[in-house]
Amino acid sequence: MTDTMPLLAVTMGDPAGIGPEITVKAMLAPEVRTFCRPVVVGDVAMLEQALGFCGITGRFNRIDSVAAARHAPGEIDVFDLGIARPDRLVVGAVQALGGQAAAAYIRKSIELANAGAVGAVVTAPINKEALKAARIPYIGHTEMFADLTGAREEMTMFAIGALKIFFLSRHVSLIEACRLVTRDRVLAGIEKAMRALDQLGIANAHLVVAALNPHGGEDGLFGREEVDEIVPAIAEARRRGYHVSGPAPADSVFHFAQHGRYDAVLSLYHDQGHIASKMIDFDRTVSVTLGLPIMRTSVDHGTAFDIAGTGKASAVSMIEALRVGACYAGRGVPRGETSPRTLAALAG
Image (tube, helix red, strand yellow):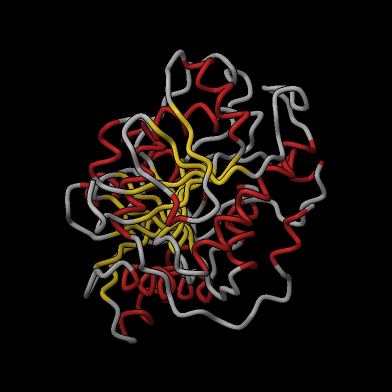
């Protein structure tokens, strides 16, 4: 390990889920120390319990600054917030304390990134129900990071090896997602995706827009969305100087992008892109939040309460999220206006 490796803040997620287990596994994986210098934000008591669940050994170095981290083999450097502990929290269940703790870890990681102490934040999974139970005013990571960093235009990207996938819509019903496929929204999605690719340092990127209907709609035979909304949006994007193709049939576009025909795909709804990415490599799909003044990557799976406490959870996705975070560390966008909410909103 060298002093030039990226410094990453790693949140351990909802302490009642598998976050603590995949965190200790990843932090003690020798390969991680070859590409980054991680510091964990969480609760040592829960991490110690996770070591027992996983049947592995390790030491903890409690720190109050990144400078105090030793990055020693077999040791985990931790900002110990002292919120959750085994005698107060039931592993494998939704609880307000889990949501409160998870939000506090995120708050601390944002503080570290805002101060320039770390180059990126890597997050373990949190639970929406636990956040709600704790009365945290956000439904997920993306909303927290966007609001609490003053970002005006965040966008989620999936990275699976060389394949990059953006989403026009995500957490809405399928029928609502179809309604959202309008010319103006597709054009805005193209522009946001192109700016995000520029943030990653990909010059003159080639983006392809996935089609909504089978076979790309067959010129209106299987639906009018391509003809009336998507094609006009792509035409306008090209007029503005963007290298955009499509609409390309969704049953093949991800394959071609994976093999280098395009730099990225704009998926039109949640499952269109999620199914493709997870079929390609479920464990190594990484979520990247772009458009923020700080870089944030995350595992693309949930808290898995059903296996929490068994030690069975795989750390492959966490290790991959660390790898991607290290690759893109320091690539935040210029800060926007101060958020109307303050970091104190995450204190619960």
